Image (cartoon, rainbow, N blue to C red; front, side):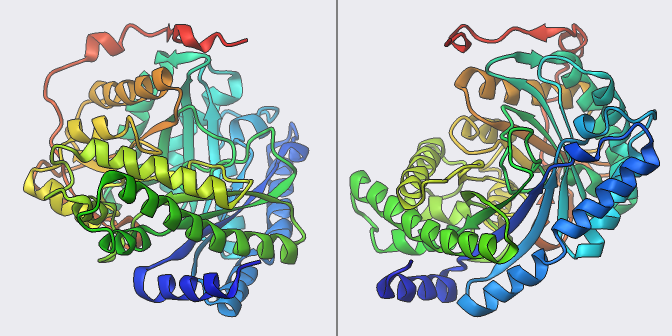
Length: 452
């Protein structure tokens, strides 16, 4: 339980620093819904999701009212559809995505993740169907999120899938161009994807998970910034200790919400994901933390070191506060969702190349970055390959969520709305990597992958 002092501190963090529980995500296994008949499979998954998650939204709202801790999103993740639907006799999973969308709307959640495939070593029949279905599925639905894991430190990089994903992202952009290519904002390409991530768009319910679990994601960039204001001018040891202590307090608040949600929903508690995920709101920005650390703008020399400090100490504080810290846990750097990052990009302080360098030490990767709609598919694949290589070599999760905005070029802006915010169209290197991407095959795993 939280002590009286912790309760007072938590209330202060909520009122003054934008502390919130970003999401309660219910992970649901669809393995027992397998059926060769597509209509029957859709019926089974709809019934199971709507039954399991029937009280999820109400429970989140009730907890928020009782404890005064904002619970911003309620979400669902499911078994990767490429696995769960593999036995269906069909050449398209678009109807499955539409079923997931209907189920999400029925129970009232914000998003449902798991229209996913794990192809790090190659594609099975179900994977190939899912990949082909992604553009139409994301265009035909509102709540469905998709992810594809194309590499891992253990298996290397599936460069055939990397090539495919560049083309799939462009096709998704084209099919949703009337909505500023929003479909691409619901599509993530991973290396070393984790099975218990509660954050969208990359969440899916791993095959090693229980039948149904509750995972909670907590976020508090504003809390960290406010704490660092009290350590202004102090040395790095003090700075690190301040971040660590603050992360501990944030995680404790999340632990309370997670355990209460688990009890009320009679569903096992999975993990707490402590990720400093920004919003477009003033005072809820990773870039503002960098400025409080002493950088003029995000992207200035020293930014990667500052992010490394932040990410490491967030994890250290979280691990001390809960035995079940998981997911991605650390610092996110999505451009469109952070007003400070947007400003830095507009001023030219933050470039795609600097963001790539920062992903070596952040929790995810190149996230919510708008690029010119004229960008070739091979260039997008090259961006994915670069980011995946960082994850593979460094044994960490990396991801790419880029939005080629059809009809817009460098210097324009695009508005996504809500938590997705808005973004400047960032320039992309004009030199071609087409022949490199066209090689195909698989890049073998690095030598340090052999740990048995």
